[in-house]
Length: 158
View 1 (tube, rainbow, N blue to C red):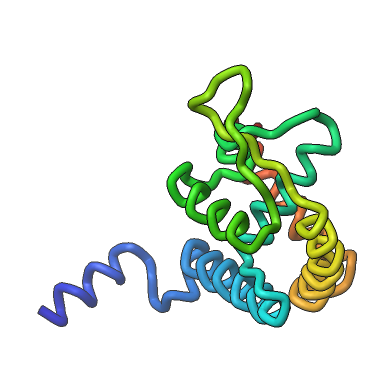
View 2: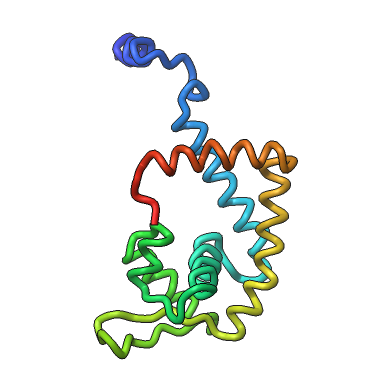
């Protein structure tokens, strides 16, 4: 069995996990998430909760309201997972989820003043983690350019 496994990886051109982009991306993404979680732990916010809250606020810069389906699409978070995250944020009184007047099946996502205040504390922390994590601006700009190119190639960005 070991020979079969060895041959499988050799035939795939993989001598070590670090030889694959997917493995490296997985390590970077999960480490980044853990670092954000650590930076936000004392304000009782997880990385995913921060993402939902900050993306809601981002969308509200240019539109009057944000619906849960719109946020799910924009954030690329599975609707059920997003619903659970928003429920947790609502329990913390950081947002409300009233039903849409236009369609009672749809919930709106409305940050509370406490949610906006907490976002004001969380955002600089997340930015500091990102600066520390990805290095000097030139390095971060190169990483962003490469990632934007990958995302653009999918053709499904909102």
